[in-house]
Image (cartoon, rainbow, N blue to C red; front, side):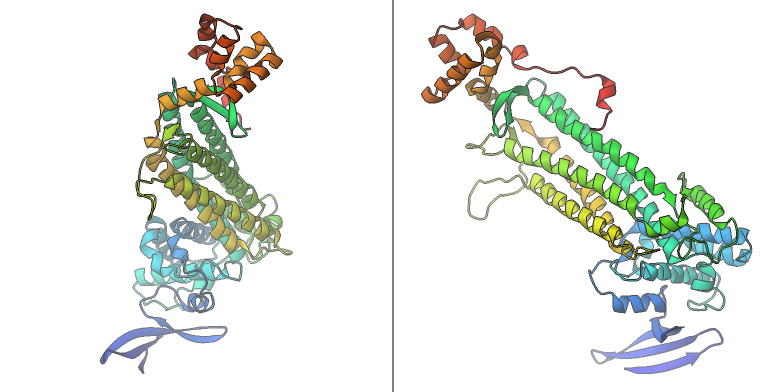
Length: 502
């Protein structure tokens, strides 16, 4: 490797020469300095020295902050609001504020185009300082380039002195995390609504499919498959409402708090003004925290929200457990429903088809439950005026939302939509079941029905057969008792009750 240095009035540029396959490759760089010394930064890079040090320090997961487009947009929205507020309070010149805002607009409108500018691992120490500095550097260099200057000309527009004016990582990062989480839940709620609609459609399709209900995996009393699937939909409707309610808590932000919630280095009225501007930029009814010191140190909102996601995960897993049981067989299990056949199920057993979609959703649920514990522990680990564990909260929360969103979409499209009922098997199971003796209890009494049930089991006979043999009821009476409309009962529920969350 060889080097050539070119010094200009604005910055120091360096060309690194690498010998690759006997050919000389040139990688131009610029030199940036910080508290610890200087570093060579690739000339084309929009990030700077603080980002580079973080890249070197945190090689953890293989993930990159740039993959989280909601987060990049939210960070840029925070920086743009801050630039406007700083202009209002004359902390920035109009020229500098405008340049920063234009750079922010690039990230807001096209966050996916700037993924490589945010290469940091989301797992990091420093309470998100590296991410905040990465954002400051990228915005500064975009603004410089748009203004006709070279990247790294920080004497014109500086990441800290200008882009980060009146801010701290400790109010920028939490605010952006709340905005990003709120936005990412839009898709989750939309996908959840679509899944509910699909299950409701299936319920209507199965209105006249009679089957056995089961308790403790044992025969209970008859029901319709409509009732079974409608219950699935109701389970999820409750969570649609709950998550929608819980995410409103994200709208309280601590922007303007700066380091610990006291607003140090901000002009009077800054916090109120910057939140108002941010609310206008995002179109969300944001409000400043009731106590900025508390808001800067506490992560309680993520405990509540994560818990509601865990609740959704648990319910999805229960539904998928039921789908696996109901489709078991196809010859030696319940076989009441048929799931879509998606792929060969075994490398050794021919003709085997597995319930792969319910199985993957089960696994997603386990991961979300684990993420909830991570978020709980990270929230508990806050000390004094700051919780430095917010990066892992961000990772876990983002993963849970992403997994649930993709999992529900897959469950809808690849499984629920294609479920078919095995009506004859369902009806046969009802008529063979000892459980239907329950319908005779008001007529014959509990003790006599016990005897009938035992005899059915000992002699492998149906309930009608035993009742006729004993001469307890006539065939016409049994036909009336076991008619479809009598086999199935239902408690009427008012529409207002359906809206409740249990």
